[in-house]
Length: 101
Image (cartoon, rainbow, N blue to C red):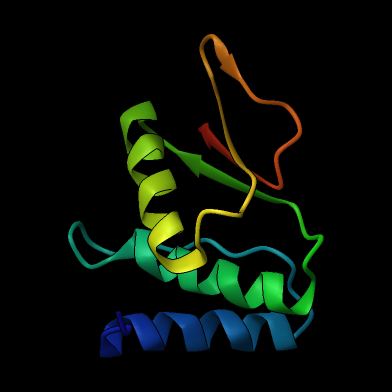
């Protein structure tokens, strides 16, 4: 699986912001353009540089968090410690926390 040109453009913008010292990014793309996979590829870069990094992913719907977790695994593999934090599901100490905004 490879990024499309618009996803590469987003990843380049995030890399540029990181090079300028930014530690956070907000990814905004239209529906269906691959935000989840773009975020997964960025997370892959973050974890290459710092395997102990902790990441918080915010989303407006809990159903999308479940989808994100599956999509992230297609890029990052099954070994990544991911947890969901909403309602009764409060996995407190994963490396990647998925949470509704």
